[in-house]
Length: 515
Image (cartoon, rainbow, N blue to C red; front, side, top):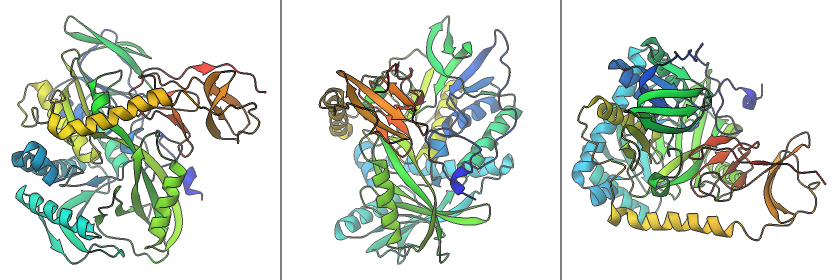
């Protein structure tokens, strides 16, 4: 059987992730009652949204989850589902930028989130393949070793259970290694479906394939315009990474894509741990069993969305793995999006300059399963009027000019470059006949720039390539068959439909005649 054809759920790319064969729950869509005012409407059906919805529903609220596509369509469906007490923003960095107390808070919270996920798995009977694992972080040169020792020292000071070791659980040479205890892994889509069932059993409601275009507040009630009509709620949670529209969070987060392979090995030398090198970008490894078959899951080759060449990234990743492992088959390959905050920590809480009662959670870096779940706890506490120790530290309104300013300038200078430069120097395409099938390309015809895609039947779709979010020019992603914005990470299908926010509108289709 061709593994790539196994697909029960959908996600935001043409490549199928290893998690997508998970069985979907039945009857996920309810009927909306006329005149219903929800306590909280959660936009986004990933781990952040569904965890938030469940926590609020457990506290007596009436909640609705609205997902533009399907549950798990976004990053949760493409994650590699590592659960760590150490973060991409390392403890030395957090010590320096936010203080040692912040490191202790985040270390403790990360461990508590792992336990919350385990408790949900057990309490709701979710068959999510949850397993505790040791994790290894290792260096390969003197510079990395120096950084690794700093990480060890700061992690221990933060209260993380970590120590030096003489192994890294991989057939990869290393200079120094440290081992973190009681880390974990799980099946993210099985877990998400379990959360959805638990939420529904408590009276929560879920709507799929419903797009939220805008909202306004009248008499303390938020009115959301959706493809289903107007929906009313007392609070809104945008669990969509960057909230829709143009706002300060678009400028404080940079969109990145990470690439993943699911590999069968000839010699069954699958690592029984979570493993990470310290290269830039780094590689990450683990093993998962799907339907009785073990797979080595390896990720890396990260780059800013819309900037790199996806097929080259996959090839580089496979070449890297083949140096150390005996590959029998690359059964899965996919990529997924995440957002890097300018000062290292996520933004969670009230939307800056937004109507009171609109909450956001973004900037999780590569730790979405942990930080998305933590964000759900923070936001649910704030909505319920419960004091949360992270409300100030992770507030979206915070400004860290020292730690974040350089990254802020760098990322937004890049945005400005693409806004201007991509409008010039396009290759003049005198005929569409030379464009291969199932491919897209930016072309200029008659002085008009277009995003052109030719499907497998030879039918051509032409789109206005100007991203409907902030006006940058999209680029073609040949691997995931999508148009990606290099500025703020908006992604569109070959028909111009929004796949990933923050755009609210589809790309405009252009009528052309094939020459």
